[in-house]
Image (cartoon, rainbow, N blue to C red):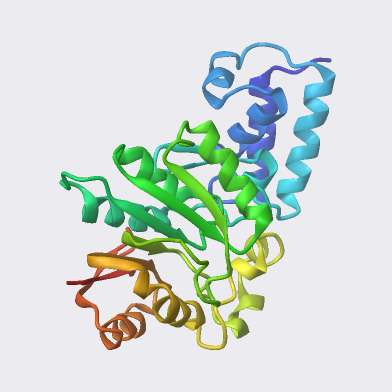
Length: 286
């Protein structure tokens, strides 16, 4: 007998709850909406309608993937970041609320400028931070840089979907190597680089360890390899006065702040996430 969308939602919601998934209500709604090829908002309007057998089968299949540990963002290939709807795939990290602190700090550093700012987003992944900056500051010009061509393809799609193609470009480069020639100079450089210590990768939650790209997680033995590389290779691209803002692990703000001071940055400070951890470290060249 056909089931309503509401029945499918409640059934999946219960399964996710029993599996210990914290956001079971939200994830059940997202998965049913994805299976029904509806927006979550449209699904809420249609809860009392009957779903086809095909849609019920898709709900079952998507739910099984989530129960096996696959993150809901990779299943639906959509995720919200700083008010923007982004495409995500297993080629990029899933944007998190911690990284919204980086976007907010970057926007705050540039807000109030009378002239257009040029911004470089290193290790861009999905392009979430650079796109958020470009969207919030219509005068800005942003370069998204990543070593992974697959990640850049996702970022480029997000740029186009968000209508930012005229102001945001994607460039392939490895931040551990010297910057590409003719990259130019920037008023602000931001980065959410890999910062997990290599030995800690295997201790991560299965949804991260087994599904998210390891190259975007592994920051070397002490988790600081990419910060050193950015300061070594990309600090020279900052205009004077220029700003640098970096996302850090919850116990890394002190170490990264010291690296910034040793590199000659002034006004080094930090911004906290909702849990009270110093999540972004920033400084300036004057």
